[in-house]
Image (cartoon, rainbow, N blue to C red; front, top):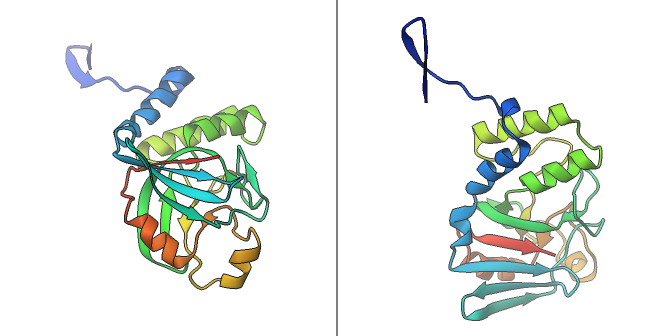
Length: 197
């Protein structure tokens, strides 16, 4: 959009502060729309300790015995609380050379989590706006705010496999055995939707 001032045409600059909050969330949510058309999606059922691969035809594969954060699950993960955040995510990166064997990173925090953090008083309105602006520029919300980040699905890797069988041991991620994460990663690509509940 162009504006004229003294006969000079220049681009019109939009500022996040001028946008209604719902529009900001909508714009950021548009970044995940391609993922919604994915052929497969992953359901992590933390109560049953199961990760399921779903397609239009139903459940394709199932992985039992997963572990979550030492703090259990929560609708909002705060840095250091060792909870696994619940919600709807998408895969943003797959690292096959991780200390945890394979690391499948999710887009936590999402705009929904950011709104929840503001509503609960974990961040101010100004910080909320700042994080949204940074997210717009980077293509994803920052991973180093009070909400933490680098949440994903991973294997055991260099961790203790015997602990994995007995306890929830992660700092907020979902862990499976190395063999399970290898098999699960074959179903996943960047953009694959993941629901943690």
